[in-house]
Image (cartoon, rainbow, N blue to C red; front, side, top):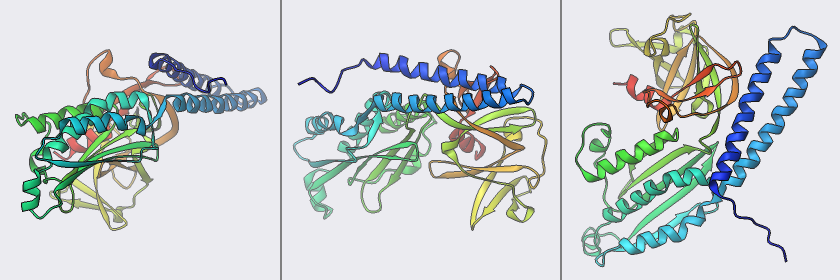
Length: 358
């Protein structure tokens, strides 16, 4: 009986995916060129054909992505062994994997492999000894869970345990000079996650222990982006970070402090307003908050309302890491080649929110 599977080197899959990315860029360029033609029946026919080509490219992208996907359960033996090999005799730990059927991009899992292993090792250290747990009236067997979930174009990977709570005050300052081994570990993981355009959330569980969740896009090569305009400049916001857009009325806006800061009041929620023209030092078309547009974005649990002049079309973009050929630029997560051949800048939503709150 013939085999139903073949083994493919990851490097070859990467090359295939890169070619799909090239097709996305070329298709965008062709669309831009056709849009610039004068209106005619020929132009309409070309637009119909380019629309068909785009659908084929999207299908090809889906197939290429699916080929790179593996079930999370493929890592179970690795993580099981890691836990067993690192439990001291004075501890008892039960390890659970939840969401083992969840599919992940093999490339992303390889990027996160060391980070996940380090989080599991940290969780093992955080579980108390059997004697300590008994004294604290806890089940002498500690529990470590690793949970995988795919939702709305994102992968969420959580490592949690029922040991001791963390000092979140120290962890909230991950970018400072730190000497504690655990904090250095968290900082290194944070850097890996941010290179994948992801976020990391750390929180104490309700009674015991803590959970750390890594949120990353389903694939880090191609993303859906919304073009937004500020003055004469156009930037790209990943649609995965967008909650909604709104043209606010003056009664939705509340000025605080000395009047330089403002909040957007939206359904009983107060959302900090970030004037991107000020943040990026650009001359805008609008400065009055009731004249422009708000794009409400979210990074982790933080929300903000970006004030812009207008939003343009939504499109798929091929993400290119700037630091590969240059260096990491604050508040920018990557770049792409646009339909007219120019470079499009992808905004780093998390960094902008964090840096604007300083």
